[in-house]
Image (cartoon, rainbow, N blue to C red):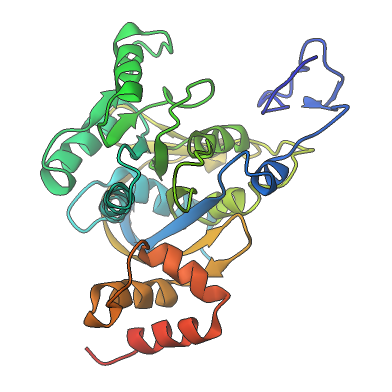
Length: 347
């Protein structure tokens, strides 16, 4: 009997000893993530969007400002918007907003009884991971998170492997990694992922999200959470996370060099899609949240929930967070109306 959670290969090569078609396994029996959630074998997942404005300079020396609410954005500007969002690490940035919100979520989980709840930040490369870790030390945590990155580009490099092993058994809240905590690495206490990587293939996305689906019946409201930029391609991957995969799409890859310039390419695009630019700044804003149960709360509802929790009207309210409260309000009209009314009050 052969068992796998990823019945396909990015290169569409056949899987040994398995009936396959175009690189996709044809199983005799399929037990999907959707079924696993229903059976409480896996956690459901909430996806928290980060929005805001990005500013970057392209290879023609033109400066562009693009928000995640802009429509009709060209492919080149869309790629630049995403690249700036995941690379620019600064005060008030989109990346910082994700890191701060995710850390607040972990703190709330620990206060509510999940005392060793942990988070994972997935980065582009070792230099990017070092900048993220340094920013977290100075602006988010007041101490440096655990790092796991191999400059040898070797998954068996003993230094990051030991860091992951020690983190698994520790109570440290955060680990910052580059392609080291993905397939085959099991850290059950992970509850949150901050998606700051350029790995945008379906396989990579599902492997990374899979780090927070390990269920723990001891936890109250046991679910995983992923913080990600509101890029349409990423949101599309997230919204289809419970679907069965029958056809693997061409990979989308953002390639960076060592000097912060970057080239962006897609597996079905030619060399004309390549170009270079410099990320100049980003400004993070509140985004919406959706989950694997099909609930979808927009940014105004999350903002209202945040105000509700922090206001004096929250007497007796414990054991929740803005995103979870906003999702709960989707199915509760009176609560939804109260949260939206609070958000719309003059300040």
